Length: 76
Image (tube, rainbow, N blue to C red; front, side):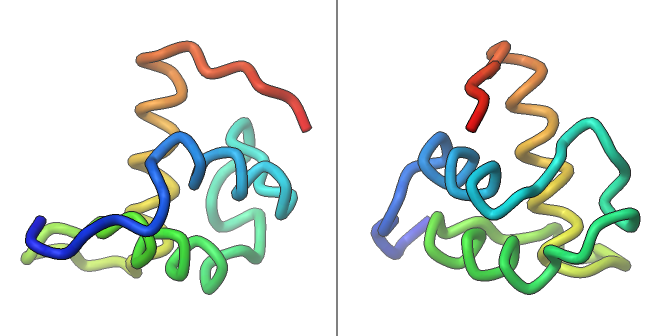
């Protein structure tokens, strides 16, 4: 990632929770795609080159994986 991050991954996770994103539900059951895309851009996240989904969907999946890996349990 050549550009500097405006926020960290964890800060993006916290902001997503503040927006109301529920990581227990499916991405398509919610309507936060644009907001997650903006957070992804602030973090500097880029979806895979051969991705067939939106930036918001891939970032949601990425945050979900990190949440489970690091046991992020912050509740807003």
